[in-house]
Length: 176
Image (cartoon, rainbow, N blue to C red; front, side, top):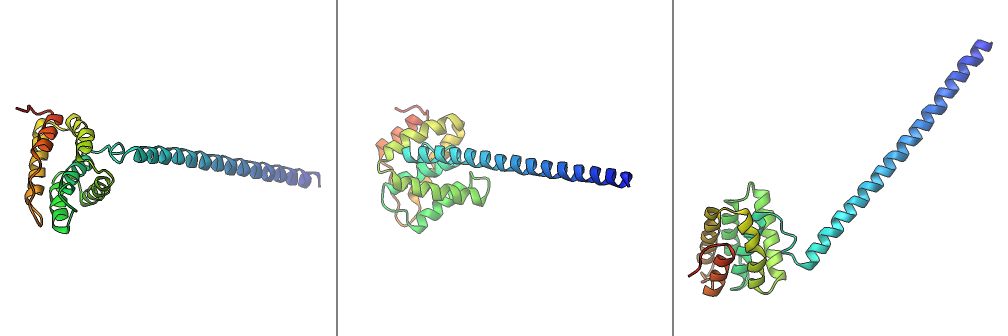
């Protein structure tokens, strides 16, 4: 009988400690979830704050920056109609790693260019960013992409000389 009481005591103690460990594990998991949610909220708040300042400050990818720059310069001459958007997608798909990245860049570019009225601001914000991240050959390709977009679509347009001059200057090209 004492042997049976000892076994029941050991089993009771094991059950008690197992329950305590399970409760501590649940509490630790709950704390980790709360910490994760707080970190996520902080990150989202930071992104919202950046986006509220300007859609351009939230751009951290050269593909999105190029798409936004090209779209803003095209939108200066009227709304981006389907044929023009198709051409923008084509030129961006040449530099994007996949179709999803192309779609993301073009959608963001259309939204950002609609938020900013002055193309000069877009050039002033994005051209230095692109100059830092692109080599001279890639910067020249960017200008060719802009030229292709300007000549395609429903109606071709000419990028204003002052805009092109400013863009070339901000991209680090010598300007005469």
